Image (cartoon, rainbow, N blue to C red):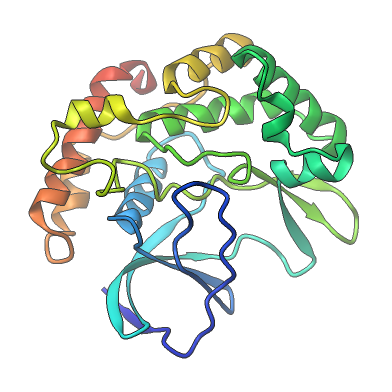
Length: 269
């Protein structure tokens, strides 16, 4: 695994969109670097992108592992390619809604039921951006979050990209999966039973239950996500990580993925 020294590189400004805060981030040239902050976020990003490559979801950010030196310490991180062109702007849905209606999306939908929240969000995005198949996009997104147990899909982690020359919009690739797979080892202790940890997780952005919001979006817009990997494929990926991560971390990630494969068997049809 390559190590990069970012000691003299200014970190990107951290905007706390979530109670857990954000990972330290750096933007260098066409690459983004993120350092572990709560546990094994880089591993989560890497595993999610590796397994999404074995699915029918094509619009996502791919992450690779990297060592990062900064502030007198060395930690594990991940690196990804910048997915925007120079003349494009990433606009989170939270910000987009505030620009047009003077209130953030999270506050606008806070008092509604889950179906109403999803319906409102889909229609709002279609109205402002002119994009179609927004419901399908959310079906893919919420299915992936449910499978990988991504607890950080707040309304600043869902975005569109606007071309500042043409003012046309496109869907942003799915990004920020670092708080998946129980990566926050402060909240999801190794000493606690893995199923107790899974039950503790609260989803976002439409309901605290992954299954409630997934059932709602699939009922409204259909089910689309399909995986084509096996347990053997997971072992092949994790076997290459033995020199980077502690065995208990790798075993935990494997156990989580096997449980999610059992629970969401219909994703593998």
